[in-house]
Image (tube, rainbow, N blue to C red):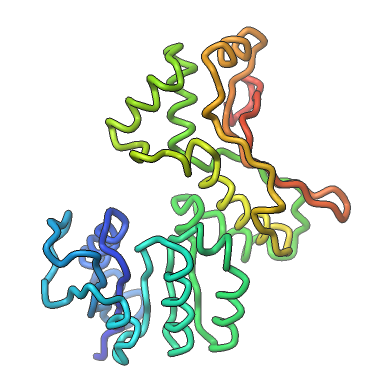
Length: 275
């Protein structure tokens, strides 16, 4: 039985998880799709790097084009990150008739419509459920379950790092700087936490959610963004005194023909589920 050949771009934390899932669920996958799934080639930044998962070294290459141009590969799984160069890889893969799976929220927020248009032209799938709240999942629900509904508002906590920081500040009365340092030490925050704490990560996710939920093309210029780096212990304490909790919320709302979309620290009533 001919296997489905998969090429991967990236083998970091997410890529290692993909390998474990594909290798650990072979029987279930084959039962569901009727064919075995085989990882045929993986692009990595460095061949000599220690890996979190055991991989046949003959599958590895430092050249992503070897993966893209391999005629045997049916599906490209992109978990390498990046935007412009990664877009070129995926657009070329689609041109070659390969399906694409990506967890890249930055890429899909900035270039999603162009990538999806190319996929439609080539009759290929681009699946990007993992780019926003992959554990729920929400994107498929918006596209399939709510396709005929008129959504008027979406609101949620869409970034785990900032939620961890604000929760620790609320529960322990610690300062922003103290909790950020702890989050970095534990690996919850990056060494450069700008994308999370200044709201960019959440903003990209809200652009994707807003575009799908409201059936319009949104970009970063349409969104008001404010992160949590200016939230102080005093702000947290003042919110507590009036029965509120501060959370970084993504909010997308439709008013008649107008759409507003934002990411910002918001006071939420303690009785609200998001608190």
